[in-house]
Image 1 (spheres, rainbow over the protein chains, first blue to last red):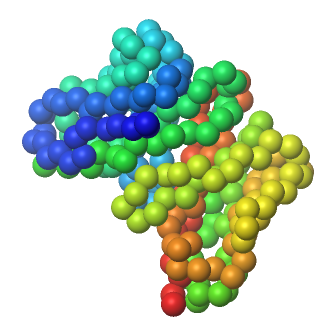
Image 2 (cartoon, rainbow over the protein chains, first blue to last red):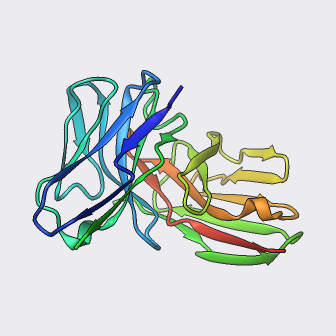
Length: 115
Length: 111
């Protein structure tokens, strides 16, 4: 099993450009989420989804859009990149049978730099 | 909103010394999880604690969940160089799927 796959691993953008970070999982997990990791601030939840067609905001949703058209995929869109969005982004998934419990499986991360 | 703080932020130990990181939540948690992130890597699940006062062990690692379910600790006995990394606690906000992570403790082990 591949687990959680994120692409691209590295990306450099100019301010104002748009892009999509891809996340795919092959474990049939209902729950998927995006986090950003900045030095000294841990992992902060951006958006999450508990199933196809269902998404919700996390702690830091501004500047990011998500959609969940299939169980497998959960892309994160930056519509107009800003330097403050320079970060490492992690996608994570888990089985969604119980709220707030169960192991999160993380992708390897996508390092984004906005100039 | 809910906050989860960890102390210390950094810890350098000599190989063979013990290490402890503490996690404190501003609200009661239904459960708490611990993750380890190696340098340049992604977080990897270590354990989940659910019951008040629960203590679990994994070889040299001991995890504890506080009686009030607002704090937790991870203790490593006789650290090894393979223990290097950042340790995060994480807890769900009540009644939601939101997992809030602590700020993390970065452990460096000097050989």
